[in-house]
Image 1 (cartoon, rainbow, N blue to C red):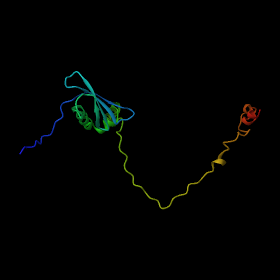
Image 2: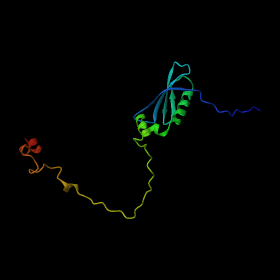
Image 3: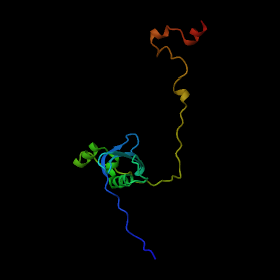
Image 4: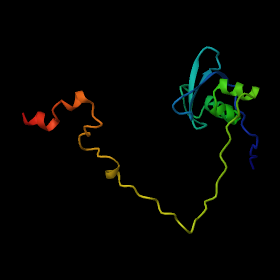
Length: 151
């Protein structure tokens, strides 16, 4: 009977050159990775912590994708959300780190207070010409739109 190997596969060493995070959507990340020959560079794209593609010619998922997933998972929470300058301010104590809002319980009220309704038509006559008391003298001399259209 053949024995089964229970050893786990280890991810080969991957050299990361840069990490690029999209400003419009922080879930989108691209890692610039150096190849094993030390000359070529590949781009490994990720979405929400999962590798979605790599430009290397090997089979997918490649060692670059697995390494990028591990590197992204090892990043601390604050570094995933805050830019570097903000992290430095948090470390010096000049800025507080964001805190998740506490869950609030829904309170059911048995009595609902009626909202006072206001009739906007009585608030001001928005669809008619302004009164002469509010209108400047130079504007009162100009013909109205209806008079201009009639002539």
